Image 1 (cartoon, helix red, strand yellow):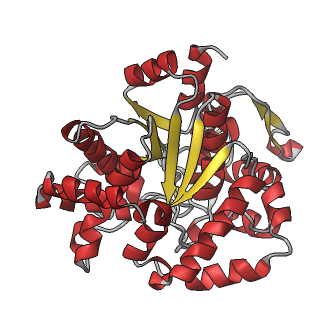
Image 2 (cartoon, rainbow, N blue to C red):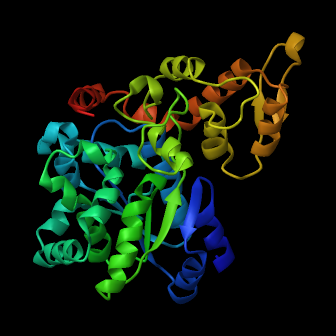
Image 3 (cartoon, helix red, strand yellow):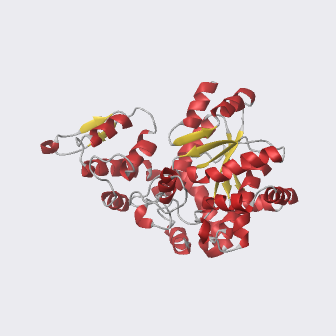
Length: 359
């Protein structure tokens, strides 16, 4: 595969930005198998963002010749009071996430799973944490705290203030070429890029993905001064709001019901969660066949070959929200079938993790 194809795969939807494109090109020009990662707090059930989008982008990265690490941040989840700080539940959640990603197509032979616990046993890791905290002001660290899914005024203990330094140290300790994450982790990545220069360590290129909007639509909660970024973070799918998200192993009936009740105002294309599923999961920037089935009296079946074409028809009122919802639901049901089958006889772990979610 040539460099242009590799760059295209990294930038494929739902990638929203790469910092920087020049660095990414240089990586591929000088390294046949660069090392990348994406980190997760194991903290409950996987929705479309954590489960499906992660699997899709991990596969893109692997196909681009990148050695990829899925990092299970158990210590970070413990600090952030996920699963009520119960490390046993956090570890179970991590093992469950592995099964989710593999069931959705991630080749376990081509990806490496690493726990934060593996890094935390190394003294050199904690040396990096201390050096980063010594080089960062309290104000800067406070601004980074929103990466935990908490607003600045919600911090409850001192341990939470070292969380951003630990996340930066994770990246530096693994000597990564590329760090991947949702847009909500951007502040942590800017911190690690700055700290890498101060500590004279490898500076990671950062790839940020779009945050899939929750089904209840847009809201603003004060996570960022930039209103657009705030809406993106505040409105993202959250495992603690079951009605606002679709879990990757939801039944066909649950998917249909959640999609039917979702926010999807007629002719409104901005901040529309149903259109986001079409754009970021179904089409992903590619040309493909997407047929909306409807009665003849309402125009009959109509086929779209690109997201732009679909969005344009919806904006003009040529496509009714209910017809769009029905077709998106059917497509999602097909995409998620392997995961649904995998967990069909594993209801116990799903119930345990669902009860353990603290926020």
